[in-house]
Length: 89
Image 1 (tube, one colour):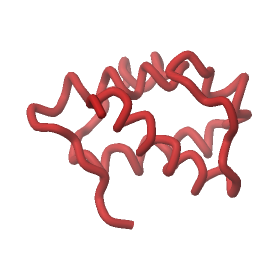
Image 2 (cartoon, one colour):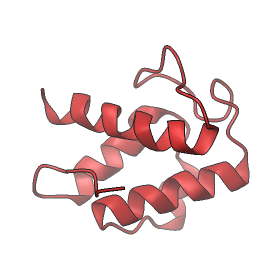
Image 3 (cartoon, helix red, strand yellow):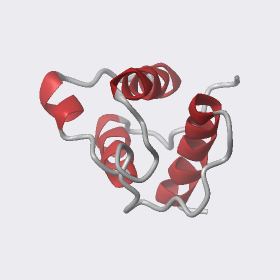
Image 4 (tube, rainbow, N blue to C red):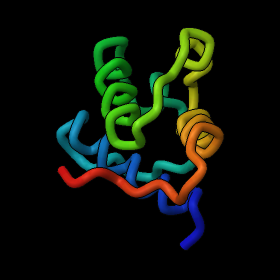
């Protein structure tokens, strides 16, 4: 499994925790707000979990550009040097 696929699977776990159910049909092209119905509070929670899990910090510009699942994956890959692993829940 490549890094992008692993990250997608790990993000699915974070999204499932936030939404309370497993989102169906999620791909890298899925819109966070429009398709999954995440509001601002949900987005803050998801981003906070991503920052904690991957030990990264997102700046304001990066946060405002979070529209799709692929945006989160790209930021994680750009900010980590080693293969990301989800922190134990």
